[in-house]
Amino acid sequence: MVLANPTAGRDLATLAGAAVGDIITRLGDLPLTELLLPATRGPWRETSAHDRTFQMIARPIGDTSEPAAWVLVINDVTYERERQRYRQAQERLASVGQMAAGIAHDFNNIMGAIVLYSELLGKAQELTERSKHYLGVIRQQADHAANLIRQILDFSRRAPMERAPLDLLSLTQEMVKLLERTLPESIRLAVKYDQREVIVHGDPTLQQVLMNLALNARDAMPDGGQLTFSLTTLTLAPGQRPPCPTWGRGAGGV
Image (cartoon, rainbow, N blue to C red):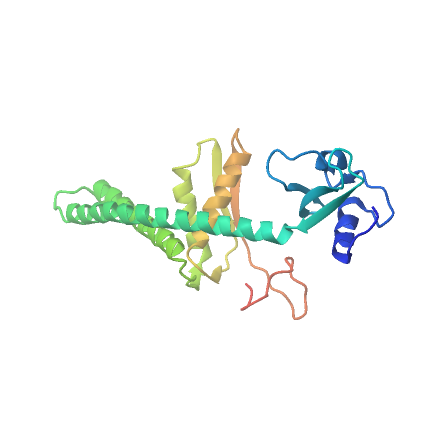
């Protein structure tokens, strides 16, 4: 390498650990001989090094059959690639949100009919206690479905979280009842908790977090096993470091 401007010098140091006067054989994961060959897919070649992405183009000086030297142009496109990935992710997220909104509206109409007819059936005089119990289960699950629909619509509208006091024990127990009917029978479910009340200030979408944890646990136990939700409280003295460093940041921790 005979000459390089300051920006190219920094890029070459990243790509090859080289400086002016050094002999270069590779640039990142791309051999120099490959870079000097005629390109078949556009003039720019792409390579990476140290978590950075570069585009390069080489042009001969003098006789193209036997060039005396080469001019190399390097363009650091790391930030551009990150922005491109971010835009693509945002576009996919918007598409998913639109699709989720459409499905949620249709699903909401179906659930409305289920709730209406279960209420009409509940007014029948000849129902047995067992039938009334079954109707109560239907209505309870319909309420859960309606809550899930609301979460989907909030997601599609990018609605802000609505934090409120939540009984974490009650929420977990309801989730376990639902999981008992959906997870394989080879997985045993349990909830461990102390006698203290577990109230957190959070969003009802916390139920979805528990669902995701349960599904991850199911995938990790293909042969079955024990899945336990454990709830406990922790009291920190003033100045005591929390087990998780991120606790207590922002608007207050639990």
